[in-house]
Length: 177
Image (tube, rainbow, N blue to C red):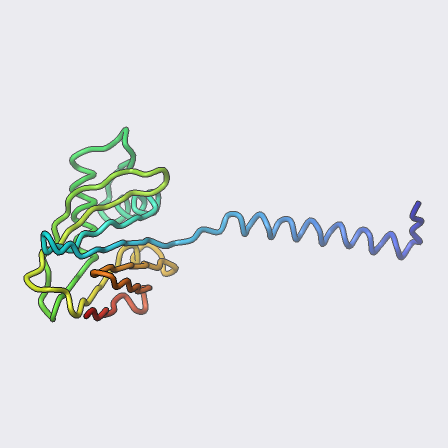
């Protein structure tokens, strides 16, 4: 059995206070949220298209659309509507810019699908020639939070390359053989 002196008891009380403080800090860490989207892009040589799938946290996109377009909406399967589709399309297509050999590519929004806490957005872009030098700009959710990061993975043939974009640097170039 431990026997605390008066000073030992004070230390034990301070340790309890410190322990409570650490627990409070750990709970705050649990509340911390990561702001990241990922986009996988693959060149399909049969169709000469870049095929894109972006994954964005649904609650972030929902809040941004509410604020930006001053609308009341819910993004999920039960509330899927033509208006939501139009707003998602309008927003997403205005956040992306892709160039091949300095030629701006037209982006074709194909639709979206809900996946647990994320929304998957499908886009394709037609190419006239093999993608040698691809310029990407992705500002998705940068107007929502300065902590947002957008990760892009690109596959052309056997080559895989990635870019990480953030508000201070929303674009980059990838070169392929």
